[in-house]
Image (cartoon, rainbow, N blue to C red; front, top):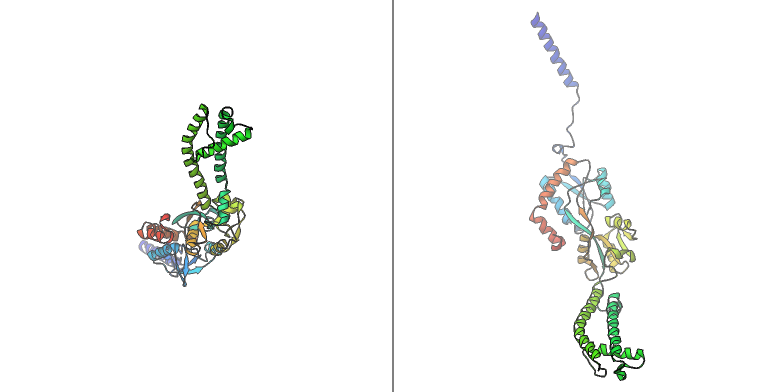
Length: 372
């Protein structure tokens, strides 16, 4: 009796478990896990921004493109490129229409609120492209001669000669009235003339001190003038050279005084707006550089690596990029925020790529040795 009861209970328990399993819904695999990554190709938004993204004959290349392709190859991912503007790229990555964004994308707090970023793969700053200064035009030479540096040196020289002339007049006016006497203006003028010809080592001999004090002054002045001539020559030459090398824009502080252009929606536009500097906004950097080459704007503010590349390639004879960089920023890949697992895989591959000699060779190829 007991045996049959136990058997009946076991049978009922087995039946209940079987029914429960049959009625329970199947649980789909977690689509966010790397193992369940769909086999379809990734949608990669690209924004043309040489040398990070270059499009030539329908094919893409550049620093960021080649880095992404290294990452995708290591992970075994397939993908398709979709060309997009800056705003479209971030909107698409944010809402999931794109899986990855590739370009000269800088990391900012506002952008981080909308998308994820990979680890940075490059660091740069904003730069300024300006018109190349003409070297030997008459107007440019006159501008240098009227610069405050040149006028300061000339003014200092005149003041020094005048001081020596006054001392010569004071020591010689009574004992040597024929050369330094008469009206004070005439006597000081003769002293100025004597100081100038002595400094120039010309020594016409028409004016010469006769008193002990005057001759002592002349002796001291002759030896002092040797040093002063070298000093004044170096100073005036330096001021003229600086004037030849510098234009109206020498750095960020000069931007409010000139016509400035930058790309709409860029970090450079944000930087200018934050400082109250008015700027003309364009949709692309290439047309703005063309305007600068034509003299329609005085300065173009944008990412320094991009300016250096495009100016060297397209406008080397008409534009130059100032050596100063400011507002340092980091470049990274934009990633869909819904896939943190993919971000980790990308970051690991990215760090491995940055540690290779091939990466340093790539930077040298696109940016030159100064950016390594």
